[in-house]
Image (cartoon, rainbow, N blue to C red):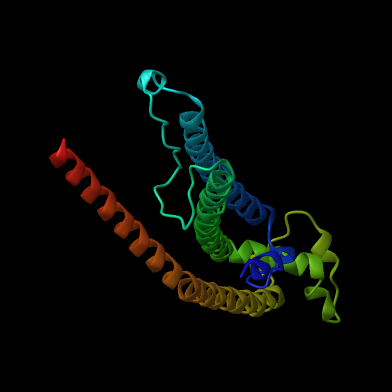
Length: 236
């Protein structure tokens, strides 16, 4: 799907006007900005969480200093391991494993979220480009005729094409050519619309199971956290 956007399979950028290129660039910047902001926020939260676990193990509390018992080592997550984490070597293994889980797990989720939203933003931009093409179809068609010289294919005097402020409305041959070319441009717009709908359908098929699984896991985690808070508050 990403290659389809980059290669211009939905709509060739070479056929775009300057206004359409500006629309595409605007949506591209919006997608990039959103992705980097969300990614930076997620990485910042992960860094703070990891530093909290490190600092909590390096700073002794007042009770720990006065206590004769050895304080237990703390991990970022409560977990059960088949070895004694009170030993320095085993504790380092358990702590490194949890750090890898903390870093790579949420990073993958952040990448999926930003890629999905970014593709949706680009699809919205394609609809905006299509809307612009339909609104300006006559002006774009006249420009294409002037650039490609379609009118000049007929064997007749075409000196009027270079005359400034020429009244195209009185040229019957030009109007016929314009109508035919506008039908071609309208056909391209319809093809563009069909490709956008196929792209969105494929996007839904690919990301719907992922988003559902992520929603279920997040909901389950939230329910367990609320249950734990309720149990702890009753004990206290």
